[in-house]
Structures are given as structure tokens and as C-alpha cells.
Image (cartoon, rainbow, N blue to C red; front, side):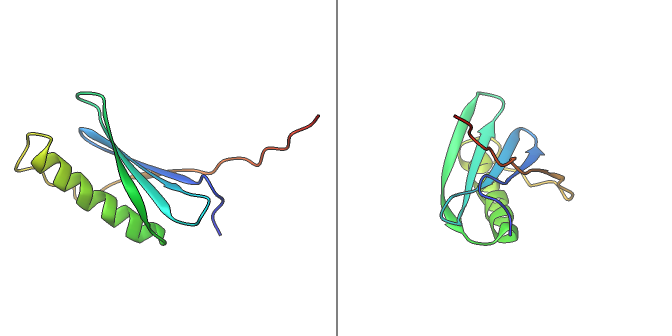
Length: 93
């Protein structure tokens, strides 16, 4: 089982896609448009990592065509996802 805060990042020009595991077991998805510095926060709604990745890519396509001023934008054929697993933090007092 993946730890809470586990994150996947994909650099899909001109977007950066971030998928992060929430405390309640849902995946939160964010799009960052690097051209204008915009962040699009999508509501959590997927329980599986692969389903969250696919939903994020579908949302990226929708965003780029509707709001990104690129009606012909398609996602790349190969996408490299980078993983980040947070370390456990032990607080000492």
C-alpha cells in the first residue's frame, strides 16, 4: 500500500501534472500550466493510481483544448511519471 502523500509527476509540455494520494485514500490531481503560472485543481475522485493517471491526462487534454488556446493539443504517446514517496516524520519534543 502506498503511503499518504505519495506523489506522481508528469511533465507534459506545457503542463506539469501532479497526482497525490490523500488521507482518505483518493487521488488528488492538479495541473500546472507553465506558460502562465496557472494551477487547475481537480476534485479527488479516483481510488486507483492508474485510473487517476488516465483521468488526469483526459483532463489535461480538455484543459488545453478549452482554456489553453490549443484546440489541436494531444497528449504525448509516451509519458514518464516520476514518483515521490514522503518519508515518515517522527516528531521529538
